Structure formats: structure tokens, C-alpha cells
Image (cartoon, rainbow, N blue to C red; front, side, top):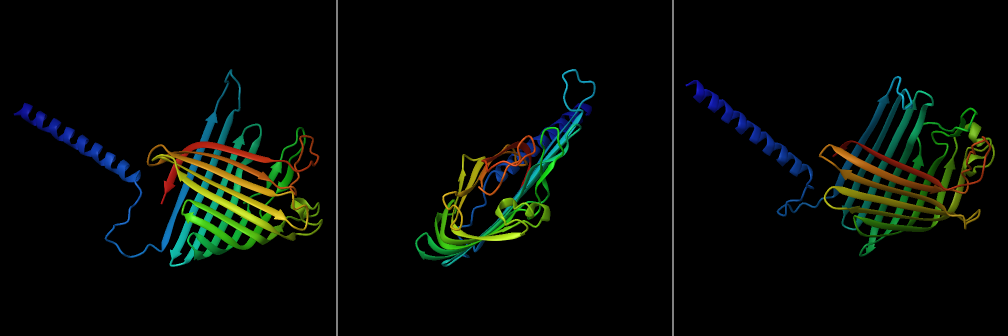
Length: 312
């Protein structure tokens, strides 16, 4: 009787373990699949909405470590991407919100930012021919917190702040959008406001505003290209290129902003992200290693991390 009970208990445990494994497999399968519309459902999908939130955390500490290094370090990087796309009849309205903030804290250097971004894009279009839209676009860009340069053997130098700079761009134009993955928007006449709300930065004419002024308006040509592509079943690439030429001052010096993001899903929760961003703006002066101000230069940012991804 005792052996029978033991055998029965072993059978129940094995059955339970098998059921749990099957449940996990089904959950992983569901997480890797996109939601498909029921072909019997004839109600059109007017809105497509979603968000992706990433947390990447790195911590280290050491004591009496012969190899050397920082006594302690902490790095955190968060990114948020939300979207809401509307499509009904000939009307199309695309909205995206991209936020990012990261910092690194070490024993010797203290706290420093590693990423800081606010980017809001709203674009409405009315289809006049297949894949062609008469459109209007609104774009707002800025950052959350003050930014600094750190010259050698000198105190930190303030280089930016919340809405210093801030860019507000209003643009009517033509949009070519053959599918949800690719879009090209072109405008020959675009208004761009440059805002520098920090008075100390405005006093030296930072970011192209007149010295002592907190804002400036520019009229020029604008174009933006966006592209999204799935690379296999577990990775997605998203890219965007913005170009602006100021008619009033050196139109040949085109402002360039390019973002590239590769997201790879490792499990249903954990993911790896790699971003590579470029900016060139002739009005943004660089701080040299000795603390003096230099000319414009290509700005490059690269971020790689593995962390928790929440997708809705």
C-alpha cells in the first residue's frame, strides 16, 4: 500500500510538472505572436495603439580589488515609446511619443547623464491618391534635465537644460506612405521655433538664438523619413532621419538628426536594445577639453543594454 501511494504521488508530480511546462511553452508561444484580426470581424480597426517600456540597470561594487576600478557604480537607462495611429477612409493621423532618460553614478565622478530625450510627433494626412497624402506635421523636441560638459581639471560647464534648447516645428507638406513600415514627408516651407528658456545660455546666443533672446523662428525646407522592419521573429529595427535647411541663414548647412534602434527579444520579458544616433546642427557649439567653446561638430551617441521590456 505504501509503495502504491509513493508511486501515485510521483505520477501526480510528474503530471503537474508536465502541465506547468506546457503552460510556460504556451505563454511563450503567445508572447512571440502578434495579435491577428478575426477574418469574420468586419468592424474596421480605426485606432492602433501600443507602448514599449525598457529598463536597463547595471550595478557594481568592489573593495580592496587588486585589479582596480571604481568602488561603486550604478547605471540606469529607461526608454518609452508610445504610438497611436488613426486610419479611416482617406484620413490618417499618426502620433508617436519617445522619451528617454539615463544616468551613471560612480564613486569618483559622481552622477552624470547618459541619455535624455523628449520627442513628440503628430502627423495628419488626407489621401489624394494611392499612398499620397496632403499632410500637416507638428514635432516637439527637448530634454528633461540640465546637461553639462566636463573639461579636464575644471568645473562642469552648463551646456543645455529643459527647453534649452526646445524645438517646435510646424510643417505643411506631402507625405508618401505606401504601408505602415515606410513614410517620406517633404515640405518646402516649414516654421521652426528654437526656444532657450535658460537665461545664462540665452545670454551667449546658444543654439542660434540672438544674444539675450529666449527664442527665434526660422523658415526653411524640411524632410523626414521613417522606416520600421522586422528582422526575423524576435528583432525589430526602427529608424528616422530628419533634415532641415534654414532659408534665412546658410541654407547649405543642413541640420541632420538620425536615430536608429534595434530591439531584440530574448524572452517574453527580457530584451536587448542597441541605439545609434547622430546629430549635426551648425548652431550647436561644442565645449573643448580645456573648457573653451569650439565650432559645430558631429554629435554621436551609442547605447547598448540588456534589461526588462514591457510591451502593451
